[in-house]
Image (cartoon, rainbow, N blue to C red; front, side, top):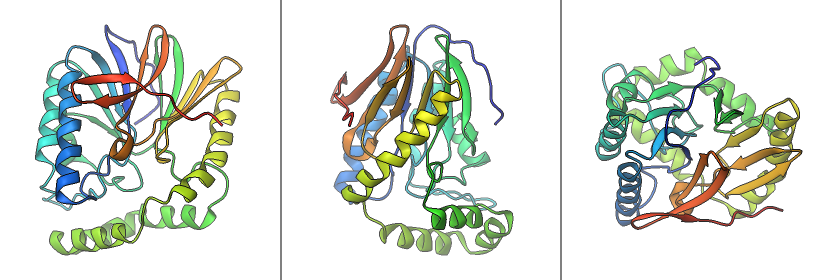
Length: 260
């Protein structure tokens, strides 16, 4: 999706990231999905825009006529929110970059596989999932280029959907949420965010790193949204600025992000 300048209708702008739907055991998944659907219902009449900043799903790949069937409740909740008047934008992450027409039809979201630039409440905002953007991790950058290439996608589509899904879930199960690795990633991501602010953005917002963070720099705001999976993290933008929040049963409450 090309960069765009959006006029903000009445309501706030919300951001969530990294729910990794489908990765946890049955009880944890049920709780996570219920909380997410409750949030989406809660946003009716409150959100003019919702940005899903990547890795909503731990795996989503669309074969020619099939997509993961297990996320019906969330897709229906997204569709209902869109029907209520909220504009929803989905940015593909490293786990669900391949979302496309099937996801669009079922969720009624705009799908972007690239970062977007938007304007809300007079602020020029850069939004991305965040994987592969900071300096370093050249091995991952090379892998990212390969797995997102046309030939790789075409080759994967040749597989039967059940086999392709099984392989993807097996690969996902090999990676764990490593707190030490996350902390090591914060510094390079912060430098990337600050560089984007220096380019002239009023705010830069990413997911990918699962710990909520907010920094102010020369009048700009740099944010790591944090994950829905563990933190139930939500960012809200209204006329007064950005607010780091978390979902608790029944509503949103303030959250205090780390700011080292």
